[in-house]
Amino acid sequence: EDPRLQVRYLRQMAVITPYARFGLRVSTLSERSTLALEYARRSDEMPPSPSTIKHHPSSVNLELLTSLLREGKEKQLVKFLSKELSCVSMPLAKRLAPS
Image (cartoon, rainbow, N blue to C red; front, side, top):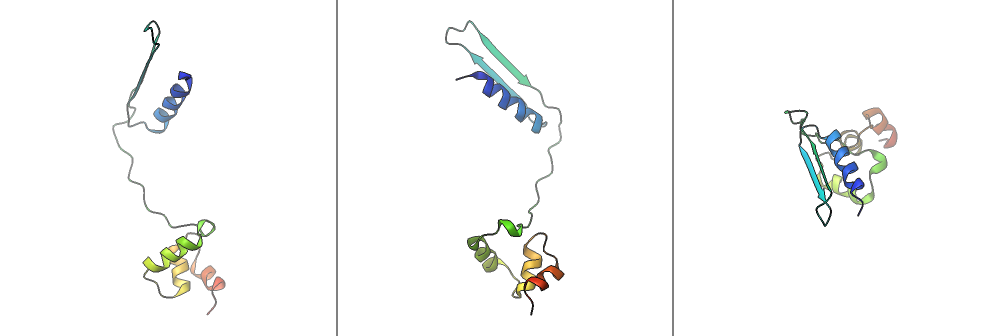
């Protein structure tokens, strides 16, 4: 397999993860040719943990909607829509599900 693919992947990983150190060593079967790469860490600080985000309405399918309704605490549809889905404000939820 072409080692350039692994080199490109490793380079991309080094760019997006500055807090990690990466190394790669590729040798031919006869050991005459060796490629050795190392990408040092550029940061000693880990990024903050990702926060949980709400689901966008366009990404919600029936199975996910059913699960969210079961797990959710909101009993009113308008409150559920505005609290569980991103980009759905209370006025928009009231327009989508009028009382």
